[in-house]
Amino acid sequence: MDPQPCNAPPQIAEAFSKTVCVKKANAHTGYLIVLGFLAGAFIAFGGLIAILASFESAKFVGTGLSKIIGGAVFSVGLMMVVIGGAELFTGNNLIVLSTLSGEVKWGKLIRNWIIVFLANFAGALFVAWLYYQTGLWKTVGLEATDTLHVLGLNAVKTAVMKVNLSFLEGFTRGIFCNWIVCMAVWMAAGSKDIIGKVFAIFFPIMTFVALGFEHSVANMFFIPLGMFLVNAPQFVGKLVPDIFSAEKMANLNLNGLLMKNMLPVTLGNIVGGAFFVGFMYWFVYLKGAKKTT
Image 1 (cartoon, one colour):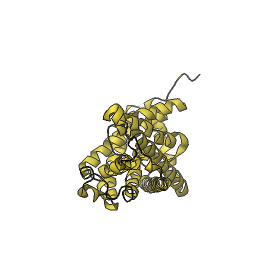
Image 2: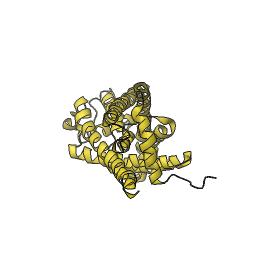
Image 3: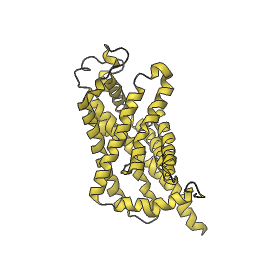
Image 4: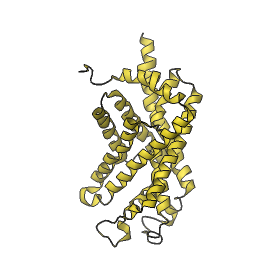
């Protein structure tokens, strides 16, 4: 039996800086594209089950518990990324550990982020499009004759909300989100068995989703799905004005996706992951360790 059930924080920092992040930064383009595509798809799968889990559940357990349930099931996405093996932009913000330690040049860090970000987008967008083709979004709730109780409408509501955030709202929610996501990745790296990794991922991810924080890769799925669905015959002309005002609906387009959500959320994710986790742990466990030796 291993006398040390998990890796200590200094060991995690050393592993990320010397091995994990160096490998990611030096990976060839094809590797990053394929695994980036898979990561985007995996996060989208988490988004799909979260939409289903929160569909009408607030009626029975209340809004708070409904959000917790949605967050709990969404965590399966990061589990597939971390345990199955994939390249996720938000998690790769931790490569900054290696750049600060001098193991990886800044150019390679930016290269990794750009390739993985775009590959994540492709994977998430593909799942959104493919799910639209399945027609499963037509699933109805208790009031089967009411358009407002169709599963797909839950996705449209989510997308409309996301493209109507202010820049500051998106940015700050993005900071909180990836601060938590990178802590999930960090703690999972500390575990030496699958069960430990599952629990290390589950609770932080449940937390960020339930609290309503913004994840750039998840939004690569949620917003395009809403854009696909809003033009479906089932919804055209039937959306409730007080929920879907003309002003709010006008932002559900490419500009709303890229400029009103992705830009502030992605910047916030970088701050949350690269600074509040990557930089701070580098300062304490790597830079600080050198000073004390």
